[in-house]
Amino acid sequence: MSNINAGIIGTGHSYPDGVLTNADLEKIVDTSDEWITSRTGIKQRHKAADNEYTSQFGSKAALQAIERAGLTPEDVDIIVCATTTPDQIMPSTGALIQAQIGAKNAAGMDVFAACSGFIYGVTMVESMIRTGQIRYALVIGAEVLTKYVDYTDRSTCVIFGDGAGAAVLGPVAENKGILATKIRSDGRYEEQLYAPGGGTKLGTTHETIDNREHFFKMKGNELFKVAVRSMADISAEMLAKAGYTVDDVDIVIPHQANQRITDAVASRLGVPEEKVYSNIAYHGNTSSASIPIALDECIEQGKVKEGSLVLMTAFGGGVTWGGTLVRF
Ligand code: UT7
Image (cartoon, rainbow, N blue to C red; front, side, top):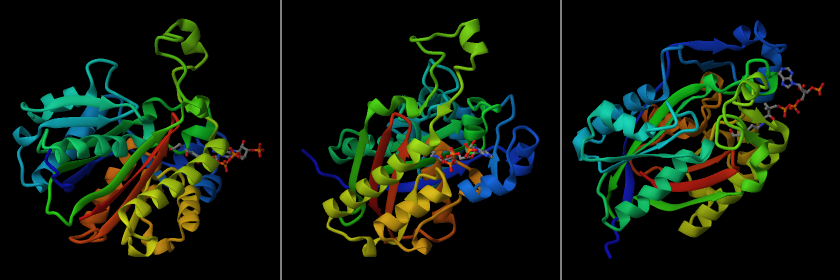
């Protein structure tokens, strides 16, 4: 069996022009800029217009990533779109993006792992590339969360934002690429972050809509602790597996859930603040899109370059979590 190193060879991101500031939220729910800033670090988030939807942002990010990889859409063998907010329940957003970008040789599919979806996608395609089953994969994290957020629930509506990030993965030189990657879940924590309505269990009825059961519900406080523990522990596991320590890492890109979660993960791992990337002030929590958006920003800003050792870690509803260690 072949043993080809798989690495990230191109990235891109996209988000709506629309912006929802903390001042805007003050007019919608009983909250304040002071509360949101001090409890989450968020100052604004991007918000799709009524006529905008997930695949559009995913496609834009994907085309940018493909171009930066020096490829064309026809070179892509598989499109894995991580999303919790698909355009529609069927067909998959991955298949819709395939059509929009003209990736006619690819298989399009979705991964449904909430905020950890991008890491899930990377982990899946890494082994497909390593074994020679495919050559180029496109992993996208794309969300229009603001259409699933209940703007009468101040404890959830202030954190989520919209956007998409994408990465092309392909064969890389022996000393580069994904050095360790792992995904986990624990469905017993289902009700810490979920949307009860709209599926086969409760369906979509007048009653479920009246009860606002198709919107996200979150026990943020309980999730907080699990998020910190899970991301820090799996990060340490990835480093140990690859034979590195935190001192070897050039930058940590955690899921942008809450600035306080990011700070707590950094402190538990023993990584200095300046080595941990954060863009939550401008984007809020974009679920599966948060890591690929942050990664692309790091590359654009020169924070991730040839030779950089990058640790990415995510946590989300399910609950799900994961980590990936990559040498660029
Ligand atoms: O993306 C991955 C999955 N998601 C997460 O990892 C999210 C993790 N959780 C969080 O980010 C935080 O728990 C939140 C930002 C959601 C909430 O922050 P918190 O510090 O955990 O607040 P809390 O839920 O413990 O609420 C503290 C107080 C409550 O008031 P009382 O009961 O103490 O009087 C809330 O009613 O803050 C109140 N509160 C607010 N006040 C003003 C909750 N939301 C707001 C708000 N504005 N938006």
